[in-house]
Image (cartoon, rainbow over all chains, first blue to last red; front, side):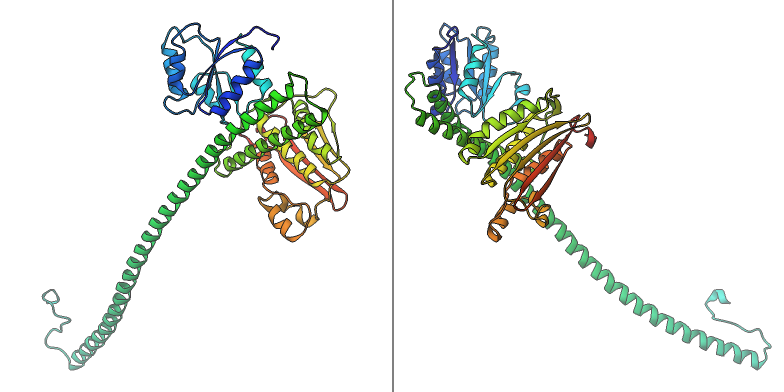
Length: 123
Length: 312
């Protein structure tokens, strides 16, 4: 168990192995985790309360990708203020993050310690 | 009369001599004109032939230019495809690496406290290999960016001493496995350099990684020296050393392959080509001094202020 307040986290990632690894790492640290495999599932998961403290979002996903999800999330006043951390496989993320209006991201491969530290910022 | 088309005229009465002289003149003139006319015709024929040849050449050139354009477009498309492919591959490889890394980290945290020292050691080595794999992917990606002129630098204050510490502790397991001493010399009060942290890190990873790879006994020393104008990163090893005549070409890509084929000594792959290109993108230089049987020393000099030296 972590030494901090537990956090509600929504993880959106299409690679099931990565999704499981992230979710298990977070749960072992005492967090409450909801998972979604694409943007559409994520929006559905956000339909009911309570809302998460933070969303971890992959960008390259089928059905509804991360960029489309971000647009929809920002247009919804109920969801717009939930902080989003991008999970990126792109080494050139710092420049892209700016274009997306996102200032927080984790570059894959993600270290367990980095993941937990980042999430703790939003609890 | 001349206006009516006559060649010449005499006014009556005229002396016979005058007439003869004039007639002779006219004959000479006609002969000269004939000669000139023939000459002109020959030259005209030559010119016509030349014009034909030129038209032919022009057509050939146009065809060649067209073919070149097609070839250039194809090359550009191929290069673009290669870059896209590499970035896709890199993205695809990062996902399983993330899974691997996260589960390794979970094991490392050993929440049940059941790991034996042996298992912990195995985990450490798996960890080191995972990092090496990632560094390889990063290097490959950087190389493709450099090749397609898409390398961008993000300059910011970078604590090089801390960076050296990070990379050294990342690569230490590999050195320990070979029983090599890996030591660092850092300035007592290090100064931040204005440079690109990602590139500086890859430069260190490649140089220190090479030193570990090619040294079979002895030590490796990583030093940071800072003067007012520059930051000097030095990686010294007690490896096999590099022949003097080979020292210039080791920075060319894929020299390693040739080396391994010809002599079983100090070969390098993409790493040093990458180090050279990344260093130069940061406005710096890389130099090697080496003595066969004693070891090698690589010195990367980065300017105080990013690319200021290059005016970029």
